[in-house]
Image (tube, rainbow, N blue to C red; front, side):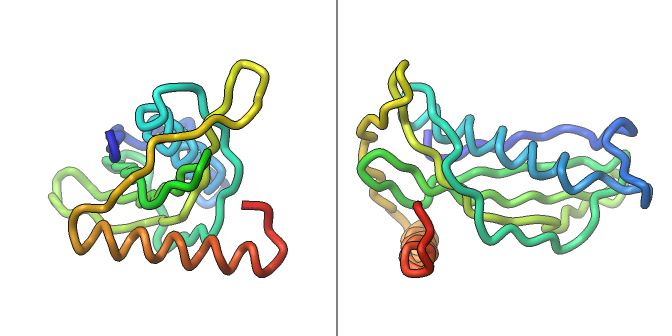
Length: 149
């Protein structure tokens, strides 16, 4: 499976001091959706190696319907670059707005934490190809800046 979407309601237990969903909670949701996507692609345990380019566009309100969509964008030998987009909205209004987006890298590992190869991902549509190119560009920039992804 190259994508997964989690849907749920933003609960009062996730509130920050401003009365909205805490940014750390959103980051946890991103990691969970990314993990589900990576693990279903690799068919084994995966670990988070990098989260980059996280951008918070709008706050999520308590009671909003939340969608966290994780899509495989690009694979390396043992890594999977996953694009995650978070959308939310009032269910009565019927519209969902992009609230957060980022790129996250997972590595497939064995029971001793050693990296294992993953099946290559081949984008099939123009949108998937553009997403793969964006992920590759981000990866190259991170490596040039001294990152370890």
